[in-house]
Length: 289
Ligand code: UTP
Image 1 (cartoon, rainbow, N blue to C red):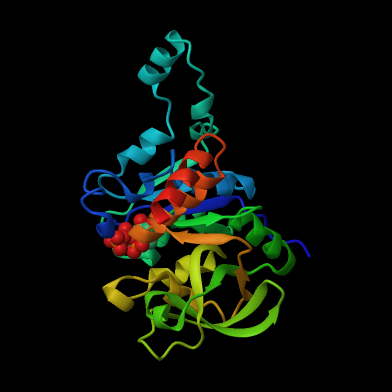
Image 2 (image 1 turned 30 degrees about the horizontal axis):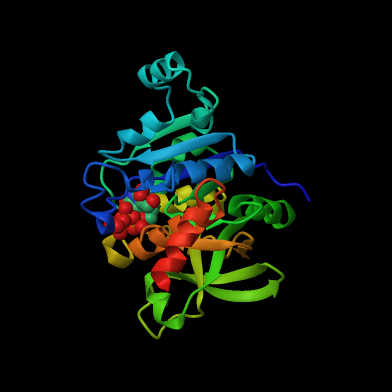
């Protein structure tokens, strides 16, 4: 079956990143580097690999470093060129002109609100949402795996991951239906259930493919868990009317919104790198004994 192609992706980057203060006082969380690339660059690369043509960033105050990152840096480039340095290292930061749009979320009212802020640019098309602080390591990338699933089942898809029972209160949790390989039917969704009340331990991770109708649901939606407008609550209302599946990612997720997860991601990437892998491995072995 063929479904309306997925061309657009929303990157909500309007959050405050309070767990990383003071590092994130003047710098967006999404610009924190995993080795030498900012988190947002990995997410954009993942979207491009999945065939996304338009990137929509939902930004907030103090996020201009993200706009600068995906722009031409004339002074830097002129100086590098005059010193005979290659500009290849900057290639990934240059996207096709016109392929990025920015919209401002004036107040960080929650992920659902951030996504809703992109409604006019998304228009009447399916779209992906990528949370850059969920760092996904795998081949092919997480969104590509989800697009492959989308091309088979259509509708709405979320990335799903099993979390320990004592962690379910930190996530959106799925009430699962029938499973078929990496695909699980989603029968219900609840954001941050109170400990002991979760319908399963299958959690929602920061990658989504959604139908545009979710924008209309978000339009009239009130605050949910934590006093924020939750995307999970809006998605829950879509389940009745449209196909809704969870896709288990074949790869590893690192929660880079959390300090331990962020350090683990850096270590995992560093160990794989040709230039620094052996030095980091040697240090780790020596340190861990
Ligand atoms: P988080 O809750 O992890 O991000 O939101 P946060 O609020 O920035 O971080 P802490 O908890 O204070 O440390 C997940 C994603 O949703 C975006 C964030 O930027 C992050 O990428 N987000 C969240 C928004 O864009 N707007 C919001 O109002 C809330």
